[in-house]
Length: 154
Image (cartoon, rainbow, N blue to C red):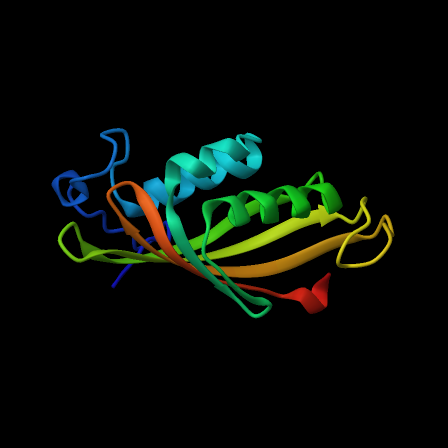
């Protein structure tokens, strides 16, 4: 595995990203760019470009298997936390274009609870929560994601 923290960054050569759009230098870049587009840029429909269908997503709450459930979950989260920001702390990567790539993305989210939903009525409370998203990526798509968020912080 290669750590991609700023002081120890080791980038895989671009040729190792066969099957991915040419704009992506390596897996770290791919994960950061698509996360930014979807969450910070509000391009939720881009999930269809970057997640396979089916896509297995494992969370403590259960397992989903469709890209539509990823979109619905994203919209529901943004309805409760419209100012949510995903700040990447680090991305660890391994793999190759033959077997697929594996990323482990450590995130801090800052957000304000402004909408009713699974966390109850909107409280206006400012929240900082940690998340880890482990993804299997093949051919420019996330095909399997394990997602754990610090629900207790929310």
